[in-house]
Image 1: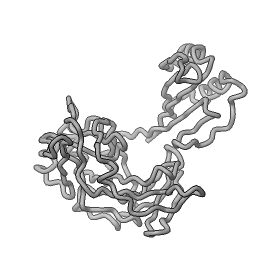
Image 2 (image 1 turned 60 degrees about the vertical axis):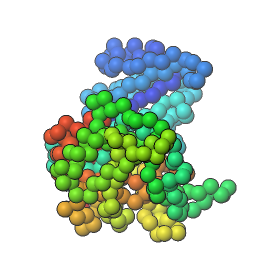
Image 3 (image 1 turned 30 degrees about the vertical axis):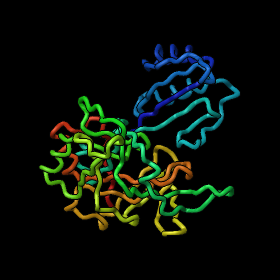
Image 4 (image 1 turned 120 degrees about the horizontal axis):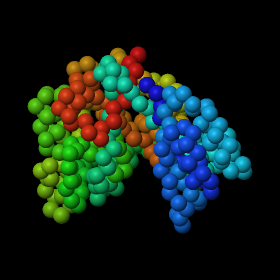
Length: 309
């Protein structure tokens, strides 16, 4: 596993930086000129941390950035590293196929954002929260879904089989082809709930929400790096606040049943901003992963191998 660094740089010298990075390091940058919505010209590019000239590239970027904007990187509210709002860096892990195939458990999310329920507020219940800010806003809210989602129109699937909700890439939806594959392969723990049409309350024939009645206990999660633990003062649930996009955690194997293929976690995952509330995630077995991979159903799904201890 290695990380790819995703750079977003705002600078009046962005055009020169783009040319320099391309000529000296062969880095392809996307350039966006200054507009009313941007503070300066912008370039976007990716660098793998395995790049043999990574240190030299970093030095070049630092030397070309405006002197009054160069500060030590800190974490902003979205979990990225920044330099006074001018250089943003996010980190994306890349796993080899061998790491994915050897993992006993994996987390899964979808980056095909196509489902926007119209009844978020009506069907989600706030159970409790970690506490409150000085001005009374709840921190680390726990949301539980209590009703089926409704949407205005069907999803245009194209070559995709899974989609995520507009508010979270950890809310998973699928079409009928994927649903039949999941059920026909007898993947234990998977349920496909209906999604309703807003106009008449009828089920969409080609849109389902993935769910599971099997929940991983909060005690199963063990932080490895860049995670701060919290404990809900009301229900006692352990919650994990990701400090940045390099955060990693492990699972206690004693808390998982090897006969289950699809688990749902409690809403214990927090981003750097506690006000965003806790999110759930789905954990899948190696068998689940192989069924989707072997049948070419994994388009726009992102799997993360999890360490089991």
